[in-house]
Length: 335
Image 1 (cartoon, helix red, strand yellow):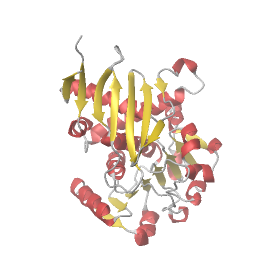
Image 2: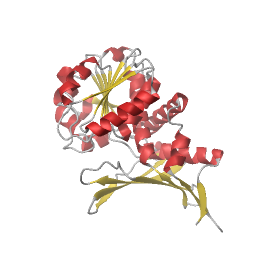
Image 3: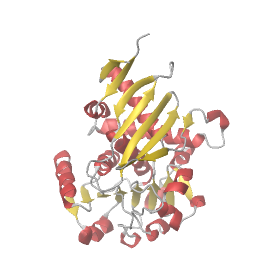
Image 4: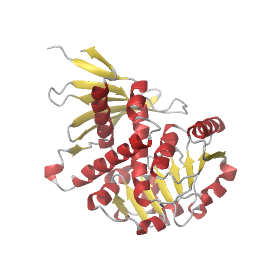
C-alpha cells in the first residue's frame, strides 16, 4: 500500500496560522485554554492520562547545538518536535521540525516547519494568562526580546487587549530591536511603538500594564521595584535553573503566580525556584477547569511563568494538519 507524507513549509505554516488576524489569534488562545485544562486534568486521574501525555524531553549534544526531542500526545494527535538550541550566540533562531503520526497506521502523516509554531503556541499561552489576569483597559505593553517570541507575544497580547496603544521593545542588540520596532509600526500604524535600551528601560517598565519577557538572560533584566502594583507579567524566555530574566523581588511581589506546569517549572524555572515555593504556584489549566472568576485578580500584580509543555506542540500541530487538509496546503510526497 502506497502512503504519503504531507510536508508543510514555513510559508505553508504562516498561511495556516493566519498571522495578524485577531480572529485566528483568539482561536489559538482558546486552543491553549483547552490544552492546559486537558494537561492539568490528567494529574492524579489515570482515566484521563492517556488523552494528554507529556513525557520528559531528551537531548543530545552536537558540536554546535543541544538537540531536544519532545514527544507528546493530546487527544487524537501524537507528535514529536525536534529543536536545535545553539550552544553559542546565534541570530538564526531555533531550527525546529514537528512530526505528526497517523492515528490509524502509526506512521508519519505530516512533517512541518516548527519555528513559527513554537513561538505562536507559547505566545498563545501567555495571551490566555493575559485574557484572565491583565487589566481590561491596559494601554502600555513592554516586551523584552526582539526575536520570534517577542513578535508573537506582541501580536497575541494586542489581540486579547486591543486597548493597548503604546508598545515598547527592549533587546540587548540594537539592530534586532529596531527591526522589530519597524515591523510593529507597520503592523499597528495607529499605535505608538518605540525601542529602549538598558538605560531607559526603567521608565518604560514603570508605565507598563503588561510585560512579556522573551529573552535568554542569565542575569535579571527586569526589577520588581520598577513595576506597577497591578502589572501582569508573562515570563517565557528562561528554561534552565541558571537563567533569570526577572529578579527575586518581581517574583516575591507577585500576588498570583501562574504556571503552565508545576512539575516542569520545579525542574526548569530558576527564577521561581529561587524566590518562591511550588505550593504558591497554580497551573493555568486549573483556573480554566474551575472556570475561576479572576476579575478581582486583575487589580493585583500577577505573573505567568511558562517553560513550555509538549502537549502544546501536539495541539497546534494537530490543528495545522486539520487546516492543511481542509485548504489543500502543503506537498504530499510518496513514502
